[in-house]
Amino acid sequence: MNIVSLIYRQYRRQFAAMLALTLISGLFGIGVLAFINGRLLQSNGAPAGGLMLQFAALLAAYLLITTWSQIQLSRLGHRFVFEIRTQLLKRIMDSQAEQIQRTGKPKLLASLSNDIRSISMAFARLPEFVQGVLFTLGCSLYLVYLSPKLFAVTAAVLLLMVLGSNYVVKRVFQSFRKMRTYEDELYAHYETSLDGHKELALNRHRAERFYRDDFTPAADRNRYWAVRADSLHVLAINWGNISMLAAVGIIFYLSAYHHWVGITDAATISMTVLFMRAPLSQAIGAFPMLMNSQVGLNALNDLGLTEYRSGFHSDTALPDDWQTIRLENTTYAYPVQGGQKFALQPVNLTLKRGETVFLIGANGSGKSTLSMLLAGLYLPDGGSISVDGTAITDANRNAYRSLFASVFTDFHLFDTLIGDLGADAAEDMIARWLDHLQLSEKVKREKNRILNSKLSQGQKKRLALLAAALENRSMLILDEWAADQDPQFRRIFYEELLPLLKQQGYTVFAISHDDKYFHHADRIISMKHGVLSEYNAEEAVKVADEHSRS
View 1 (cartoon, rainbow, N blue to C red):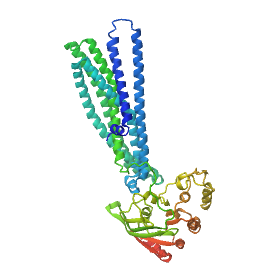
View 2: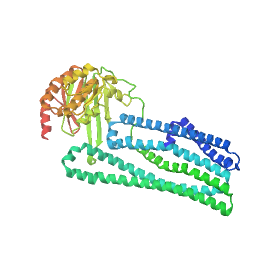
View 3: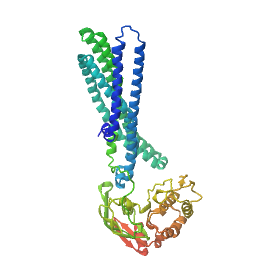
């Protein structure tokens, strides 16, 4: 679906009104031409004071209606862009974690910036395109009225112009599509330069090779297709201008040498053709922008995101006083590098309300995958997840996810602290947890907003735990939370914070390698090559030791 049809489908009534205004604007333009031809040129020296007042009034009306129609059409277009932008972000937030990972951050960022911008620029030129097309049609009808034969000749020249422009514009569209492909690649390199800045600073040979072999060729390919698109665009505009001048020359030739019409009518027809020149050139100039916006729309559609939904919350609810969460023969598999597949073998696990469970295992064994599956962020390929016997489905998955708070290894630290139901977190609760986490003197804040972000990774993880605790969820997932803490605070976490969380009613599911503190867990489960096992604390220490040696 193209831009015009899409906006017409969503705003049919408003769009029809804007087209009517634009048509009226075109009729006023034709009226100006007709007035010049029928009144001013035919005055035969009569007093022209009254005529000029009428002409001035007609010009003023033309100015007002043209400006008003373009403003209204532009307003409608920008409203549409606003809804595309807000709906796209909502679709990203509603999409499954697997889809976001498959699509990739660079492609999503390119769509949020470049694709939205191309659509916005297209709507900025849409009034020119619509008005140019309608005005050309109006002028064509006027030419038919003045001289059908000369209109036929002019139409043939204009048809040749349109065919040539269409041929060029198709290649402009192809260039935009190529350019858009390399923009995804550029965003990936931007991300690499920021995420790997320290490594690139330490190894200047790597920095040189990345700059020379990866980034510069991608930027050069993007530049090539951008220059090609602009060059073809300029060719299309100049081809249109030359065609219009050729039409004027042919009109005067046929009038002067073949006497198709008189010189006065030839001048009127030529003036009409020249009057068409600016609107038609604007329409031709706007067309590549519309083509580029089509590329953007196609890119948005290719993201594979979930359909837009206005709401944020599930209509169904799960009991706040739940007692058990059960994974029964639950499986999950996804492809990894090399064409191999990693899969969780059928997982059977029951978590009881209020217990503290440690999950151990070597890197790549499936621990984080299990935690994402447990939180409802990954959808199981088989088996089931249930809460007190109620199966988790698409209908209640949002309600299920609302049972969880988390600090994953790739956590994001928001600067606003909120409590349950999205309200501002209570001041006394923030202060208590800052004290528990030994951050009272390190964190600058204004009410529930964190002001300083230049903290160590361990301190940021403490803030993430603070944010998770303030959400007051019944389940708390901590993925290698203690890994970035110094030995002293690691001990505080296991000996003071975990008992405090348990006392406050949290069910804690923690991924841990700290065998020194395994005795603080109610249960210890292990993941090895996607297979889940359960151990007591003594057995878990031995398993952890085996994992560390393997």
